[in-house]
Amino acid sequence: MARVEPAALTTFLAIAKQRSFRRAAAELGVTPSALSHSLRALETQLGVRLLNRTTRSVSLTEAGERLLARVGPAFRDIDEALDELNVFRDRPSGTLRINAARAATRLNLIPIAARFLAAHPEARIELVSEEALVDVVAAGFDAGVRFGETIAADMVATPLGPARHAFAVVGTPSFFERHPRPQTPHELRGLPCIRFRFASGGLYRWEFERDGAELSVEVDGPLTLSDIDLMVDAALSGVGLAYVFEQAVREQLASGQLVRVLEDWCPPYPGFFLYYPSRQRQPAVLRAFLDFVRAEAD
Image (tube, rainbow, N blue to C red; front, side, top):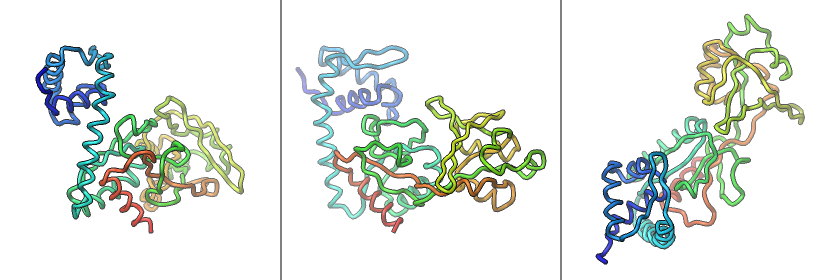
């Protein structure tokens, strides 16, 4: 059998990881058609089919599974060996892939990433923003950003940005000309509210706490969204009350565009955390980013 070029195996590994020709092509910076041609050439050279392809999915054959099991760790060892050379460089380089909740991306991660990239011009950061929880290791990410209670126990977590956050119930001044201001969370049930739906399909119950007593309220209203920024826009349009991060409406509250209620029921809580696998060696660019985040927190 003729020698298989490493580039052909890199193509196979990218498709096997992404389970998609389109996403693998984006990762490698080539067209899907070029990727498909390269994969077919590899299968022809090896004399076996490595992937099952349909119009909607890509899966590994038994031969593909076996090749992935043997070649995947070897290529990771090569990547790690090359990454270790970063200790001899003055500045970290490479791409850091982070999966983060949308709110964390906008409120915390983008500002920190901008400052980090300015300090380390040879580094790259790829942010994937989504609400659904993902296995960052299986999905090929170096780290994730979520609230502390959602992070798996086998992950290492460090605070990202402000140590404390707070939610705020907000509406426009004109809204409160038409509706009474709630004095307790229970009174929200009689007011039009903007609901939030998780990626899992469930609706968020607004959570409150005062004097050690915790309370959750299932609100109702004419509009349901799945994005915090859109909820702020909807509140500004007068559709109803929104329950959003205080940090996301700080300017609107200061300008008087929005009015806050039930503030004594919305105490601060722990903010977002940057987390990463505890069992794997950290890439040099992740180590540099962690050092940067911790230095900013000091």
